Length: 272
Length: 272
DNA sequence: ACAAAAGTGTTGACGGTACACCCATGC
DNA sequence: GCATGGGTGTACCGTCAACACTTTTGT
Image (cartoon, rainbow over all chains, first blue to last red; front, side, top):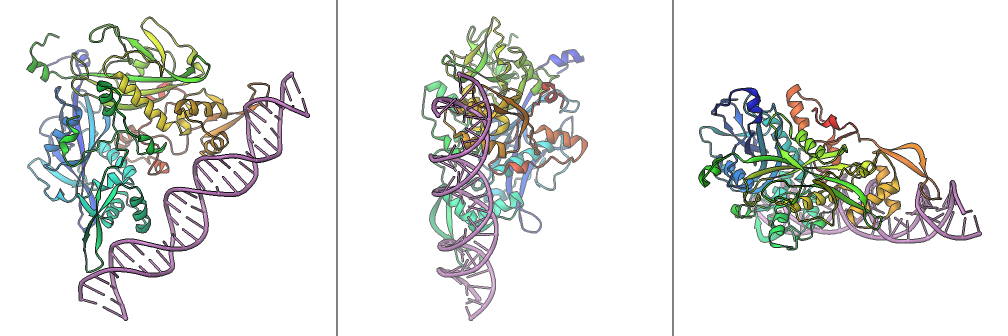
């Protein structure tokens, strides 16, 4: 669009995009677990040819979450098991010469089980978190921020659980936490803490990994006081006073507000 | 702008606004402390005449924070002591008939000391949190969300401190916490916990409130591992790898990420 | 029997809560 | 002295880290 001079461009409404930081577990060269994320190669200026977060313009008839989901679909067929708004970036200058740009950024977790169908299309590639290429705009900083968020939340059973498959052994969950934090975690205490949360259910199945004692297989079940996001209030506003559930259980240092439970049907989060 | 039919309007870029939930302490009818917030009366459709959050369009040459600050200035001359991005709302239908609208919402705390100059302009009025009028759009839900955020964070010394004046007695801080949470808090334990945080400094001054023993006067001093926001990474990205400081001190259940320390000079947060 | 991972028990440090108590001040 | 809030002491309890220990499996 040919808006010519500077003063006119200042009045032009900023472009609004929705981007997603998609995180999945995968093996690194040595076989250890590591976080991977898909990036897309830019096909236009600025930063033509550079790698960037998946994203797109916000369509006016879609919710932010739907737009984030659409961006996610552009790089992987995997269903997100977790999708949460991360932050909105909109400072002038971050586009480095393009139009002023507001980016509403989400972060998503996808299960590791399915993560092998890393659809490597022409302009999409998965990178391990510690070997990122040069990134467009301020996307490197955004990814770092998303990783920080993940690391501060990985202690919560639901977050860790959404990085593995539908069912899992406790040792898997433990590996995930150690991979994400980089810190060793006492397995015995981890077991107790995670089980005490009441958010894991023993499926009854056993799984043998080596030639050793088989481990119990668990499934994640949402806690009674479910995750919580601003849309709950929006809904209440419309249909009047539904009990929002005891989020007070989270306590004053609780697992901060707007996570969105994307259960097993990923569309459930989109139809709110 | 005269975009006529529906399919064209869908393609129109959404309007981007920045709004602020401004919170201050004030007395209620019985003299108890209570949260107050300023609202503005809408002067155009939709929701003409209804009360709404202060806000404005996002100017392309301003940062989000600057825009939030500008919105704040439209209702009060008070300087924010705390300013943090709350959430971005952008679902279709929330504008109830207007253009599709994305609202990037901040929340701000202003000190109670100065809060008496509630500039009650024609179209601005302060309301106590429990006696809000009918609100435009989904602003009621947004305010409820901001209040929830405040209540989950009020246990942290810095948040509580920013709701009172520059200096204060511990009993004042205690009153604030009780007013915000609505729960009684053991004063003796509150003292110890808050002092143990290391974020309060004894000014040496004493203040007498009744005819009783005078109380020590404290001042808030930022902790070594300071508050933390995404812009830190953006800055690091530009000038290369400055140590971001030990935000790990917050721990896994820590006081979640993006608060913005608005010290005593409110512009300091805007020049980042 | 042995190796290796699954899973349990025990202890002690720490932080928070409840509540009794002393201190400083004005009347 | 006595009332009133400022400020301290202490005992108890729950949570969690550390780490020794037992159990179950395959070879």
